[in-house]
Length: 91
Image (tube, rainbow, N blue to C red; front, side, top):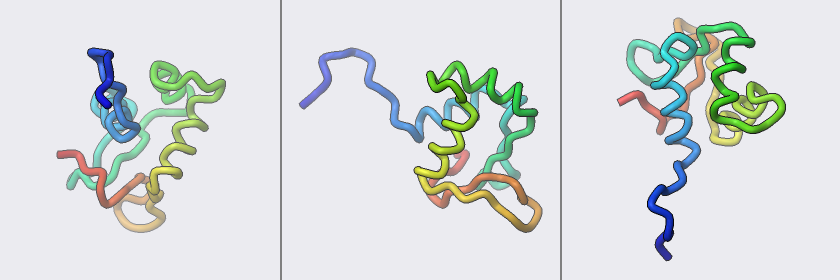
């Protein structure tokens, strides 16, 4: 059944992609576009995420969502600390 609304609700992955693309000072992609990092401090990240999440703690909600989607935080190598998912790529 098609939605009667002219604006379809974005998927979680689309919203995440928008967050990353709209806030390059806060989030950044690795050179290959296979993972992203959080470049700013918690207060700056929280300020950005308040535009996307209604939770009391949008930073925690963001991390829960990444986990629920199957993102892995890289623990070794040049992208240590970055978040990656095999199906979530920059381009």
